[in-house]
Image (cartoon, rainbow, N blue to C red; front, side, top):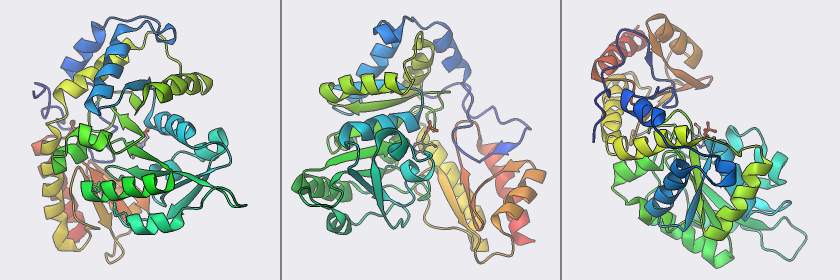
Length: 352
Ligand SMILES: Cc1ncc(COP(=O)(O)O)c(C=O)c1O
């Protein structure tokens, strides 16, 4: 069901396309937060958190889930569940886990990470299989593979279900765990029409975020077996992530799941419109499948900083990812009028 506040809030302020994390809770979400039943969740006594955890576990067909403050903490708890200290994780070189989590896998989990070259959201299961180092010799043994669905730095790309099934086969053949950084798995579900439960059954652990495209202010979950999630609860407390009357935040997450999943199709359509507007200037880095428009400015006179500065001066905020790479992200807080304004501004700048 659409939120009545959706799409009417951009007003005349800046059009913030830096990230889908910039959304503010809608009126309906705030109401759900204000009226949430709460208790001390470290004692396991917050009914709203418990309901959210059960709901998310069921969505992915797993036994249990654990509410965590951030996607980074959810990822890191999951990695500690599947990779013992000193052993190895494989993921792509642009994965959030090795790009933006500040060395946490090594710092907290003693985990050694090895990466395959990133090409958007593409994964070659045979190449990943070729990287696996077995146990029993003096090499770091591989214990898990992690993928990102959708892929943030990979331009919001979606890994096809067939590829994920192949990766599951590689994991099974080698006795490895498969983890999904599913911060935006909801977008993949909406873009490819794959049921969440279908994704869920392919992974040993998933981390999923409520605070990206779904528009909650805070919150992610680790999803897995009852045994893993019991251990995850312990690891969360160790990392300082035990929270008390946090049902006020879980209520925002429950509201987001009820109201903000199917509407992601509208964000994807807005991203497609932005892509269409900038495409004639040769700056589109790849196909746009979800809510991220990746920009490649290597062949354009403006670099990423200059583009962002010029756009900011005209009230459009853009993320700089590298000297010649930038991105635009659509979300709940940019309505159609704001997209029109951004498209006009960006084409004007790119044309100059
Ligand atoms: C793919 C991906 N994973 C994990 C995270 C981490 O989320 P958080 O910022 O809540 O730690 C992000 C954040 O943007 C993300 O894009």
